[in-house]
Length: 143
Figure 1 (cartoon, rainbow, N blue to C red):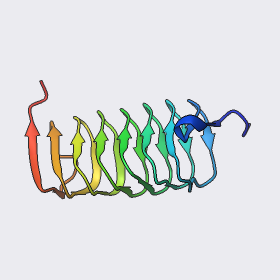
Figure 2: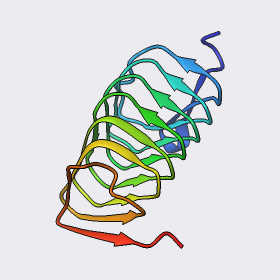
Figure 3: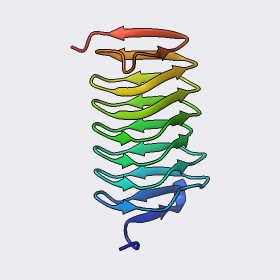
């Protein structure tokens, strides 16, 4: 069922993977990408645009994108390279290393293999990884 699992929104140069869909090809385009709730990308993602993973979305390979939003409970099984800023929402997870050229906002329950950011790292709750590095790290109380 390859047809409706992914579609293009030409006006915003965005690919949209439908919720609950499986997509089994590597994504190497100059686009933005939105993966819907519980969508599964079974390969790597390498895009010049922004990436937004919906709640519970999963990516099996490495990810490289400009600005990234990891939705709640989303999972990246490989490494994550962010050329801009990163927002990691509650309980999202990256099994590999996270490299972020800009700043990172990290919500409670997030887990990374490691985090290296060039900008501000704002953490709500506990640090996402034993190795967490940034220009400055601010820990906020999650209330």
